[in-house]
Image (cartoon, rainbow, N blue to C red; front, side, top):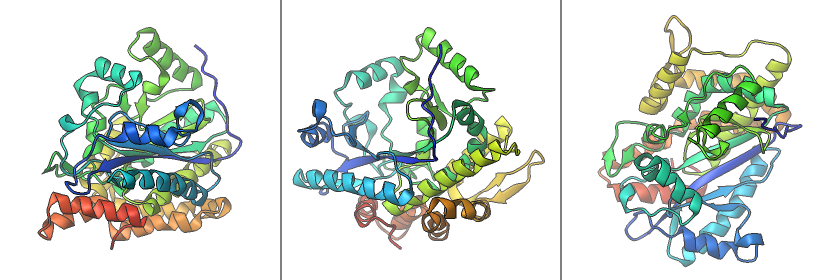
Length: 379
């Protein structure tokens, strides 16, 4: 089976943000997205807002950008749609949060969206899909060809743990501390086609992979392959899907700059015939686990000898390396905000500090509401 790839002439950026709807009085998630999204879709073709979408569960709304040139443009795009959602949510006495998991709502209390696609997904996958009460951030970066998209998978997977560590915002699951920075990472890996991308030789290998799964009827569409990094043929992008939901647009934008700069830099290196990181599969898996378990409080394996380097040092070195690319793309200030994330600490640390200071899980939700409304982390 041939899969056309709509190549992108530039390293454009698109961002998808999954939001949760919260009852401000109980701080629990509320099953209210179906009515809200229907109201926002009135007047649009097919009754669907072009940038505000359904997700699997009725407590979740997805907001997407158009094709953007810079992270700053993407932030403005997201903010306009989020303002629309926030206004409609306030009219229904709802608040918005964005984090990998909700601190205490149980997935069994959540309803599946009334869409045939999601109903079939639950029927096919069962319990692993039904418990997907998680939120993530997805970054699309344009690439010039299908072969570039395949060549980028392993180098991007090498850097994947840094995104997991920086975005970690899911320490709690069903009211309990998981002792993880990103419990969402392990929950999502419960889906049969989620996780690290396989090692593929070229685009024809990717086409063969998809043909096998489609012919075997284990997937209905190539959209049901949810790798942490994957080609998106329709958009002409590579999609980075490893991040937890981030509690504010400042941090969402910062990692958007990191994603865009990293893909741009690696693409240029591929075009020059330079070597790019080609990590061992077992190193990738261990580093992803370390990042999900310990966040920025860990070190990662950087060679076959087992040498480990602290996440903070790796992030600092990567930002330094990408500064010239960021200057060319016009996103240096957004890229340097990644260093602020290291200094302040990710959301999982801020959430735990609430309980460490004598607060409750409801107080954690209040923190999430405040950070999302403010658009920046509370210091």
